[in-house]
Image 1 (tube, rainbow, N blue to C red):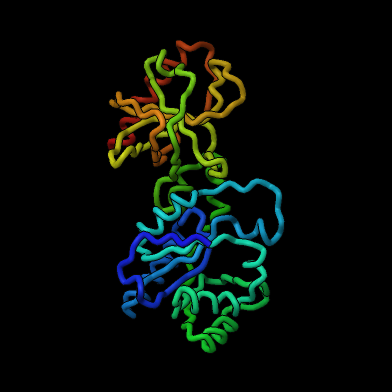
Image 2 (cartoon, one colour):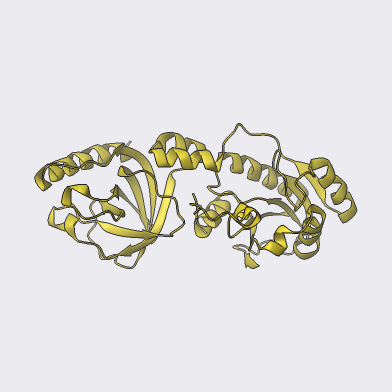
Length: 303
């Protein structure tokens, strides 16, 4: 198990916790986290999220199909911190952990992490026996000294639906479901330098292998680099106009920026998808379109 704590304020207090994978930390998750914080504040306790380093269903069902994430661990912790959560425990979801009953898992939370109140997401189930439900958790809590609270329901928002929207290129609805602009974060790596020859130098981003990459196309983005924010336009795709093969790239042209950021980390916030990927008849036509893209994107980001 990996203990990820970003704040030791009231670190020794008993905790109000909730459990979940929280991929995307979307509006539905934020609704639950708000209730965790409210209970913690009312009782003068610390708030805590228990999450996992990998998708639990892959361990339980032994799925081999690749699973792409809306948020990496780092992004998830960043969003949970922004949501006001005091502590986050990132557990490795092993077969041994999956075999625990709900009672045994609650006992672990109580004995190891001093959890005295557990906020359960609406219709959420955990533990080896999925036939158990909220009434069972309440009964176990009474035996263990954990007050089990059921969160109020939130209008249906799911991580899987957000993944579908992003893959279809519907960034507008995906961002509404998330409650923030979808993020891509990674290291700047060496590219083909083709953008530079056309007057649009780009930073090529290497993101985590399991991070979900939205549909190919051009996006208006905010670029965060070492605490500073810049406007930019992002291209995701295979660069068909220059016949550069099938390798998909993530390239961002940062407006009014001329620093060397090779090997540095960038965080992109995707504001709007302005068009899909297009194969132009010539590089001249592509350059003309890029100029039009820049004008349009600057207007979008200045609103």
